[in-house]
Image 1 (cartoon, rainbow, N blue to C red):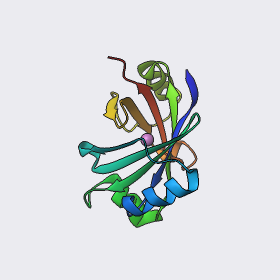
Image 2 (cartoon, rainbow, N blue to C red):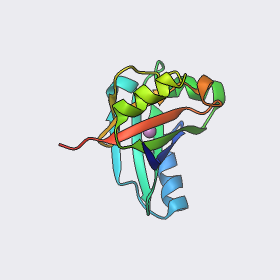
Image 3 (cartoon, helix red, strand yellow):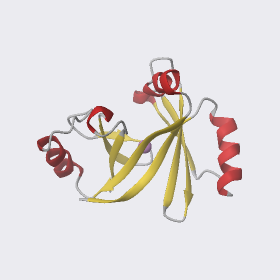
Length: 135
Ligand code: CO
């Protein structure tokens, strides 16, 4: 089951400058900065009440974020929905004809298991499913 929007991902060219911009905009400092080596991204997370914003900067030219910036420029990159059972949701969505970008959940930033849905099957919006890792 999808429970709520967990965060909104925004692609940025300069994380340091964007951290300052969003700190000013949201009136709160980022609570976390984290590199996800496998994805070639450096992230930072802001939280306002129950809403989170994830800023993403590419760390190499092959990063999906570098490609996104090249094609579309800075802006909203993905919307992440929290799910209570990521494997069950992946199965359900696959059976409903959505294209999943990974067959098994991957470890994402901010202590989450994640799966992305290809934007071609979701009206051009990259959708992330995420489930908190409990250990
Ligand atoms: Co995300």
